[in-house]
View 1 (cartoon, rainbow, N blue to C red):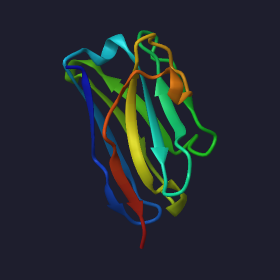
View 2 (cartoon, rainbow, N blue to C red; view 1 turned 180 degrees about the vertical axis):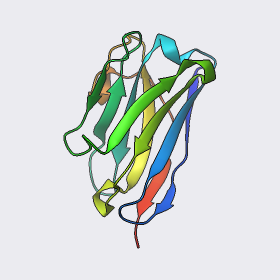
View 3 (cartoon, one colour; view 1 turned 30 degrees about the vertical axis):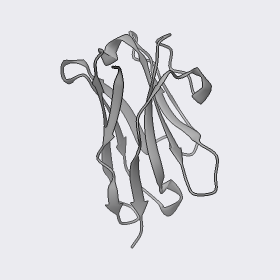
Amino acid sequence: QLQVVESGGGLVEPGGSLRLSCAASGFSLDDYGIGWFRQAPGKERESVAAISRSSGRTNYADSVKGRFTISRDNAKNTVYLQMNSLNPEDAAVYYCAADVTGWSSMSPKNYDYWGQGTQVTVSS
């Protein structure tokens, strides 16, 4: 069964950093485009960042450019989201998802496999 699992969420103070991980079970992540999305209470799910399959092309939401970095470690079958300079508006459940086409799409509807999410809380 194909599955992605997020980890690394938690409580962080404003201005702090977290690194989220997206690990795969049952398939190789380097065959897929991988996206990170987030959803805060009462809000729609929004795209955060995405990385393509082969070229490693990345895309970012304007709200996180310069603060977040998406990267791959194919040897560990893991995709990371490094989040720096966090602010309360970044608090949400963060999801990773895999796209079989391999592109770095920022549209949730293009993704085929989703994790259960990891909670990020930004508060002093």
